[in-house]
Amino acid sequence: MTSAKSPDVPAPDAAPRQLPPATVSRLTLYLRTLNGLLAEGTERVSSEALAESAGVGSANVRKDLSYLGSYGTRGVGYDVAHLSRKIAQALGLTHEWRVAIVGAGNLGRALARYAGFESRGFDVVALLDADQMLVGTEIGWLRVSDVVDLEAVLEKTRANMVVLALPAGAAQDVCDRVVEAGVHSILSFAPVALQVPDFVNLRKVDMATELQILAYHAQRLQVPGLAEDRPGA
Image 1 (cartoon, rainbow, N blue to C red):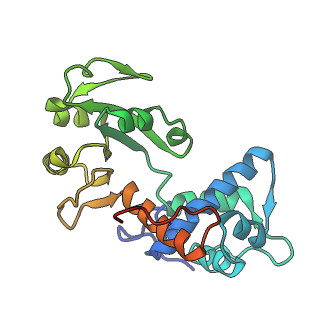
Image 2 (image 1 turned 180 degrees about the horizontal axis):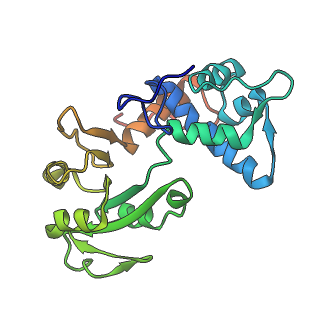
């Protein structure tokens, strides 16, 4: 017999436990594959097929999914719709995520136009910039707001995530304002290390660093056609 629920019992769509970062990364890949299978009408999928789509071993898949309480059936595989829901719940994608993008330069405009956000559970609700030549212009269906009004825009749109597509010099000040306004989930493309309180979830995307890492691996693999060392490098 089960006991009555107490206030400490997690909501039904809460992640059952803290997941290892590597598992979280792989779950996003599995979910992408599962959503594609759902669109095709596929009902079952094997761990081997999921592993191939994510570029990992099938043992990784089985271990990752065991964190969610999904073990599949030998010889049958996983129920695609059920597993898709379980992963979406674990990743928090059953919540309403409303995203504001600060910075309407080339990167910010590209992000605002990206159709993949909505299909993955993220609604871009605002685009802001300090450039008065951009304020008031329309990017897709969004009208660029003045970053001076950042706090009011975040409150009006009920944004609970912010993307910073800003130059290094402006990023920290805007980040501080975002945190002060009560938004504690931030994705930064700014080429600078931002300082935030411990309770803020900050993810940094540094494309130059990723390219440097890619160059390191390409060098080790001795990719055919790799250019000779640059003069002065």
